[in-house]
Image (cartoon, rainbow, N blue to C red; front, side, top):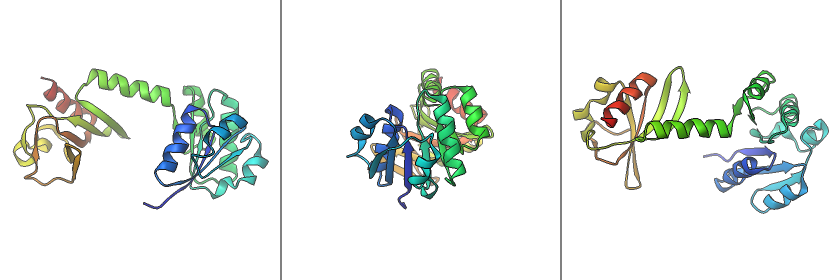
Length: 219
């Protein structure tokens, strides 16, 4: 995997986690904040850290915001600052900007001014938690839009055998794209691959098809 050049703006808990995780994954990370204490806290855990006011276009130009592969605007509750930083990043040529929104209104504004991806961490985590509570067999899920998703589920006694025997595409309309067992992952499993109780299954399908499989596992 080619290392990306990443800029993270705003070093609260969310921005700190994004910056340090990207760095640990081998990417080049520049982390900036206007608060000196936040910069000092992270400076030994990223490629470079600097004090920058991202609402000032001159400051963003000085750090070469347009040269980064990805810019993450992770400013917290200051909606105006987040919007200005996003506008500056896009106007200065940043090819891909991810912005954090505190609410639905902020999300709509950020999308209108050109953010390529808008995230609402607390809202999104709440939705994921609710889904896990409502569907205990679901380990994780990725919404693909157009009513399709990739979901990780845990198999139980009702779902054991080879993929050919289980015929999950015919019965439920989903396709198994990976099987995880005791720390090992089989990607693109074959028809004779087996599923055992407690295996982690990564499946892709429509929302309706995935719901059918969930209901079957919950019986």
